[in-house]
Length: 199
Image 1: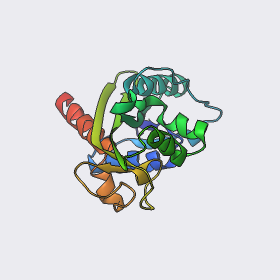
Image 2 (image 1 turned 120 degrees about the horizontal axis):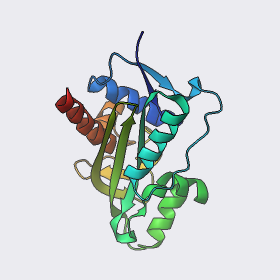
Image 3 (image 1 turned 180 degrees about the vertical axis):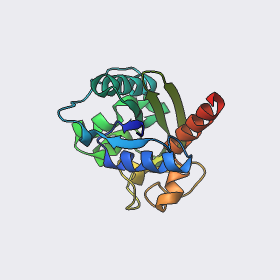
Image 4 (image 1 turned 180 degrees about the horizontal axis):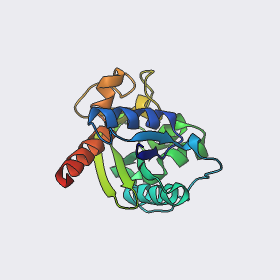
């Protein structure tokens, strides 16, 4: 019987990326991947951590307690250094609160009226937690936030972020190009190295 790995997200874009990276780095290939739909009334954790690392650990602990299954969670977002690291861990919540990603971008640029792009960094923290396993890593990509969206691929803030190594937004890249140049890729690469060191 196969071991299970629960992918702890309701975000379909993230779920798709989790599956890609696990295959790309050949991680947990002997495991059956489960998503949250497999469990009834599982609820959601209260993300009250102060950092991406704390929040992804909170999520992993919550889903491990609820399912007794090895779980992978992430917490991700972007920070504007010139705005005291806003929106940071509230990246997704700010979009809900203000009425969408464009509203968050408009708010940021209202603070910098003469700029067409602003330095930003995208972060991703991953936590894998089980009864006998624990891995936690973080990756990041520096770049720029732009005022008006460009591109139709990806999800979330992908149309507004240009990594410093490129001149396209994540949403203008083809799927594979984005997947191999993102903050989540950097985090999974570290995860792969950590697991290899342990085995």
